[in-house]
Length: 120
Image 1: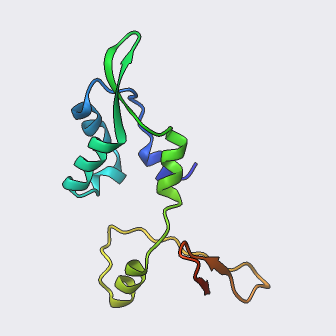
Image 2: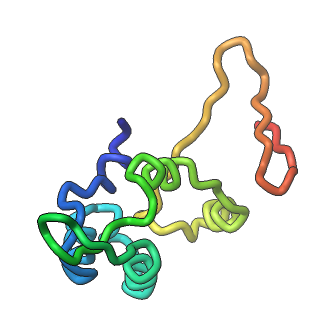
């Protein structure tokens, strides 16, 4: 499992309330980089109220942990990222992963989410 996926793993599931979940999220390096408004939106929309047989009322994440990790790991890049990188405006807090072609390959084709192709 990659460090990014490990950084979002929440060991204290379920949580007694949204505030406890927020405090747990803030222990993660990933969530520490979130703008406060974005974190509030995540807490408001990513959790649902439930009743645990032993703990009583709790809140849980709407999506399974493996799916949540997959969303963060495989989130598509954007043109804004490339423009800001080119302009030297990309904050140091933004981690970049580079894809390098294997030996004996001249280029790699990527299908972008909007159907455009880019050759590297």
